[in-house]
Length: 355
Image (cartoon, rainbow, N blue to C red):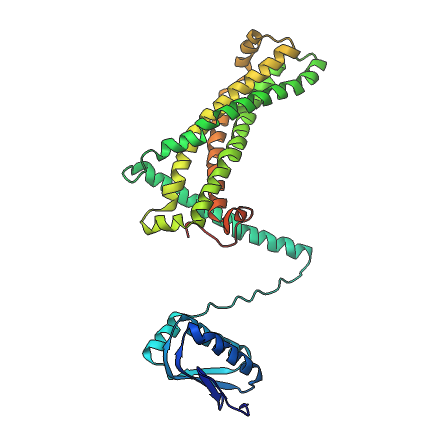
């Protein structure tokens, strides 16, 4: 339908189902243009509208946005839009400044309880498992490359990370391990005393600390202390575009940031675990002496019968695995952050790092 009264303003005129845009369309007058055509578009019912740009000489980004917006509004009414007459300069700017495609999220179908479980499971694997495996592969690859190519390694980065992750964690690991060993012995002493098996407190403390509790305590403390710090550091680097700057300089962010942390963690975690084992056993020995009258001499004489090489190796291997998991997990959640620290709660789907 053609409007009964043609519309005309400084920037354009509308008649015979055609928008005639003329002169200049820049930031200073784009607002009037948008306001004018917004009053016209709702009254148009024609199947085809032409936008004639033959009279348009100058345009900027604001003007191109307005024209694209006009085109989109007409298209939403199922009106075919034909743009013609643009000179080379105007056509180049229209192609350069384009509006992003609108994202129309489809409403989730309510398929019941089982459907929800299946959908969430698929989303979990797509969002977490897949990206975590890809990150783990990248870290493993660059760790191997950096191990044999020292020329591109940052000097002092490995030592700094070893001190930050390992050495600075010694006081809290020692203190908590001693307390946990003490509490473990106290909880077990009452039960063993009922059966007259006081001496087996040595076996319980040594086996549990060397094989299970020592590596686990160390991993939990390092995860809470260093894992969160790694996530926050990488998140800050991503939000402030430092990772983009590293890529611009030809540096791989994983190799530059994560690999020294992996080296530092793998080197120091076994030593921290040994310290946790030693002080946990000392705490258990103190409890055994105070509550079960087992002297330190008897405790040490009993230890070789309870301690096996398998338990020692198991604790060391677990400490290496836990150390790698702590760094990888911190890197994963830090690299998927959006909008600052709040993004650490949940990473966005289909987000990989480096970008």
